[in-house]
Amino acid sequence: MPRQPEPYDSPHALQRTERPRGDALSPALLTRVFHQPALIYFVAAAENLSIREAARQLNVASSAVTRQVAQLEDALGLALFIRENRRLRLSPAGEILFRHARRLPAPLEAAVTELEMLRGNRTGSVRIASVESIGLSFLPRLIAAFGAQYPQLSLELAIGTAAEVVERLDDERADLGFGFITGDPGRIEMTVRREVRVGAVMPPTHPLASSARLTLADCLEHPAAIAMPEISIRQVIAPFLRRMDRPLPALVEANSIRLLVELALSGRYVSIMTPLGAQDEILSGELVFRPLADEGMPTNHFGILARSVSALQFAPAVFYRHARSYFEDLGLPASR
Image (spheres, rainbow, N blue to C red):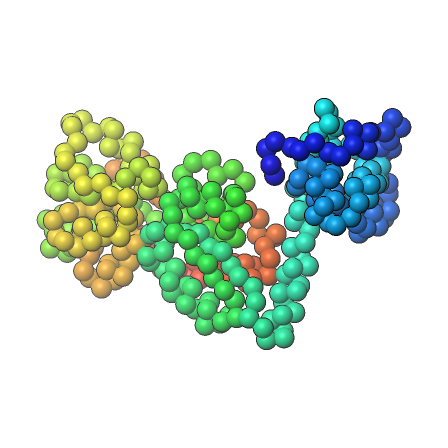
């Protein structure tokens, strides 16, 4: 929605003294109103904050938009727009209705997608956002299994930081996300959650590999690699770094989980991370993972992120069910 609303075509077009009515119509009558063009015209006006622009997009007269919006306001008994200085802006009631009304086409679009699939056409797409560590570990196999079962559905995958995954979901540039939540996620929820320990990744020949109890301070006695602040794991260990009773040694800081894995594989560095992103190397024995035993060290929560599972269209909903099942059966080193 544009921040600066455009002037509407007539300062008197939506002004009434005796309307809207004082109360709403009955639910049965309201349903009939909602199934008329009124809601479509309202959404167009709300998106553009201009009766004239809404009319242009709908290819109808401005008076038709004005009449339909007035009918909807009268049916609800509430003003949907605030008219001031020849400009429109949504009223609190208009904000609520617009938030819900813009999602109404989704079920019909999902129905069309299912019908196209019944016809055998390749249709439907899922936009996925993921943090790098999940993208490096089990996500490729999850996607491969999904693609084998649903070859007619397209997948779009974007890799970013945990904050970028939440941002993509919030901006509706992604349908589902895989990642961590370290701050306020706003309207994004973690619908399926797993926990994993924070620890050290190193070759089995490293002096710390056989330690029965390993702390962050123990790791920093050796050349160490840690994530840069934009990677979520750094936010978890940052308070423990600040509590060190001595100056921090020289560290390698990287903004890539894959680089932390490669640094551990070099044999020189112990990388502070979760096992996510190094699962294959841990399973093969090239690397070992040792959880950190620092008092108060939290587990890292990761999982499937979404705005609203119930509002997912057909293709994202199919992928979500597949991913949820995969997640629940997922075996992870040092998970709880």
